[in-house]
Amino acid sequence: MRHLHAGVDVQRKQDASPVTAADLEAEQVILSALAEIAPDVQVISEEAASAGDVANAADRFFLVDPLDGTKEFINKNSDFTVNIGLIQDGFPVFGLIYAPAHAEFYATLSPDEVVRAPLDPSAATPAFNDLEIEEITTRTPANGSLTAVTSRSHLDPATERFLVDHNISQTRAAGSSIKFCLLANGQADVYPRLAPTMEWDTAAGDAILRAAGGVVVDESHVPLRYGKKGADYRNPSFIAWGRAPSS
Image (cartoon, rainbow, N blue to C red; front, side, top):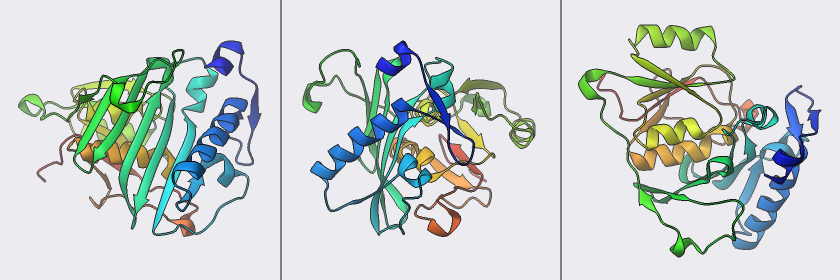
């Protein structure tokens, strides 16, 4: 938030995507903390991977995106997040998302329990037990009427066709992993993402949505798997559903 208010110095990575000092500093804070609390668990993080530090995934590892929604951040929009997901045997088992500009924190407490809490980035960080947590769940669409959440920065023709083919009644644009949170909160029903993403973009949100009652599947209706070193940790196209479709 200090970087956001002071002004954003933007550089370009090898793939031409933007990176800021906030991305890099946040990653170092997170990596340092994870090394203390989980020293034996491997970490695969976006900026380290972009710099060429990419290892084969272990059976158990963290996926970290220190600033998801960098384009939103650069444009001073509020839809950017911190994502930390824990993967076990290819599937997300823990997720944490923090949206500082929204002062909202999300975390899974178990495979089928997820909570959110207000968390002011300008205030002293409270102990977890002192947070005003609220359990959240996905919703069943009313009368089969679906609300889709779409990417503000990456709405492509394939996604637009999906919206038409599934008779989406309403759409809501959002940035970063907040889209998963909107489904987990019961504020939307489906999030189609048919443009490229990386595993660190989705692991935390995938875990949170699963714990809230949803599912994230590829175009063959197979749940997303993580740890795909051979694919450079790139995801296939996917559909995130608040409630799994019956067919």
